[in-house]
Amino acid sequence: MPENKSVALDLSALGDTLEQQISAVPGEKPFLENLTKATLKEFALNRQLDIRENREKENNVVKKYYAITLRLKVEYEHEVDGEKQTYVSYDNYGGLRAYPKVDENNEPVLDANGNPVIERFWAGNPDGNFASYFSLLLKTAQDYDSTIRTYQDFFKFLGEERQCLIKSEKTSFGGRGETIKQVIKEFI
Image (cartoon, helix red, strand yellow):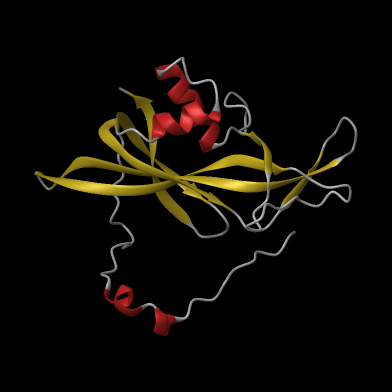
């Protein structure tokens, strides 16, 4: 398995950032058993630094890719002890792969800034047994807006504030234990 690459933070250089209040308290995010109206506020894409590999079954060729995580920010109201409260939730949708252009040695081609040149994306099948959260969200968006045909269309769609219905799911990833994820089930 490839080793994750990271950079250590110099705490002395962070200044006032260290005074920021800690808000990610376990149990802070309510579990929504029913569909709840929410507003999609923003999104961000994050590319993992480590490159991964998979072997194509048909011709036994190793293909390298970067895992991409889509992070959505949604805002919603939920009633707690008879009082409505506004919540903001940040949730990750994994499953998008970015396949880099490779050279004759099967190594990623880098641009002038040292970033890999991406040749194509792959989101997987939303109807399969192992559908990713990303592929399910993409299908949900396409069900709402049939003009979404490209990744550019999809990211433009997500870039506009959208009304949606969310519902909680319990997930676990990387041995971190169970967490609550607010998942977009429908755009309205």
